[in-house]
Length: 454
Image (cartoon, rainbow, N blue to C red; front, side, top):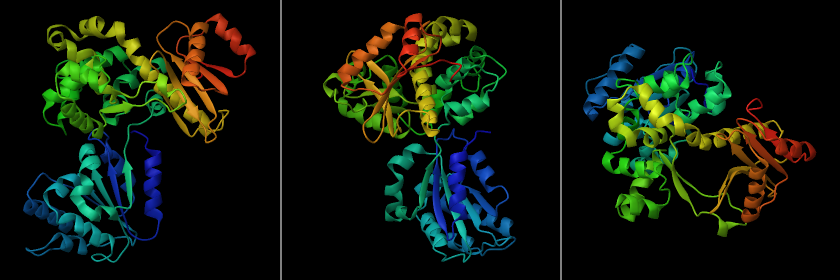
């Protein structure tokens, strides 16, 4: 099971506090929120209701039936939502945990349900202590529509907890027999999506998993990219066109306009929908004094698996159906995979620095971190404290060695970015050349980090 210790700790804190509470937990429909909720509710006095796709009348009938079964009571034929929750009973005297899963389905169709949750929270129905958890697997609806749908009553939600993807460290823990390199590859392909990680066979190589799960018709992830996008978004032809264009390297709005033929206004609307669904993101350079030399913002596909699909598979979809998975992998994926993975190695290195920061092993107290995207070069990592002291880093994934020339290029980019750093971190997946190794021995502000350290 995926470890969500931080989120569970936050929920336990809410549970332990006096009084009633109303908490929203949301994540994509691949976040495995059900396992998380099941773990939290273990050994607690809990009532769980999974919302159906049904008319308001049928929904109430189903809820009524489950309340009757749970509490051994009989409700009247004309009962309301209020009546259902008015008849709750605690078996132990503990706080009751009330979980309404797939809350968005009932909120969209029946405006009478959420007021009942407010009444329950405010002790107008059940006098004992209650912790209400509304679970939601529609990211786009939560980010864009929920507050409008619920109106001013949305302010009654005390906490909003997003079940984000898990970290690279969690992936390392899930696959203890994998090398760091294999874990980076897995992370770059799947991201931290719990459902995908649960499908990955830890006893098989990365190539074998790709071939069996993604490239084989009938494989668990064969149609996943478009199924995932289609689970919340319509007009797939437009979204696929935009995503394939970004995957080809068109990262700015004007580039997308030229490449797709869609109007800028149309592209902007669809990009906002993709961003609300955590599929894309706008990358803005870390703010330094060298703004004139930085790109003003580029778009990239945030979701690792969607990115992998549109980079390697979507352009060669015909071949996918005509060749074996192994041949497809060797012809269309293998030769470019290392270049593709570089971006995700940067994310891994950033996570490493944040972990070191947490235990006080970074020379400054990091408060912000990002990437500076220049017009002629990039600084992979910039970290800053509250006094505007900095560290910087570059990350070598695909080349045999990180060289002195690359370090000198970093210094050049720092000049363009108008930034100085107390410490420079040089990350390399494969090694360092003799010049930079010797230089680092004599310069303590240059730190070399290899895969063993990671």
